[in-house]
Length: 102
Image 1: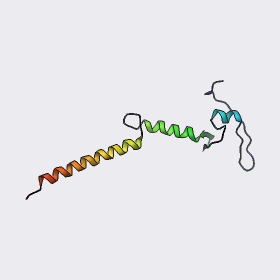
Image 2: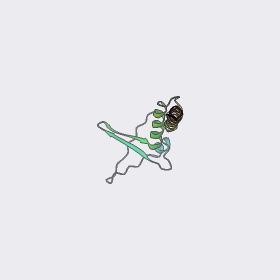
Image 3: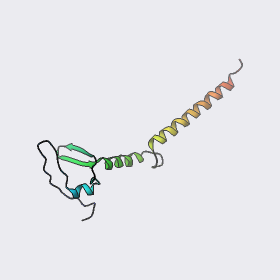
Image 4: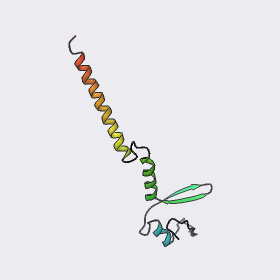
């Protein structure tokens, strides 16, 4: 069985809501030393995802919306704001030179 192959696990849920994930599953998910899970609940059931995998997926989605498909959206936003500030400063300097003496 490959690491990407889907596998079904049945785990008991205790009265207090605790579950023990099998060691094989924890190892496959990189949780063998603990970690965090994200639980999505819907009509069909629940989906468990590691927090790390969720962050990685969000970063992949965000990368699609950057200009070159690589880099930080925040860095791109800051660069756009700096460019706008430079243009604004140039416009102000240009208008000051035109109306100095009346």
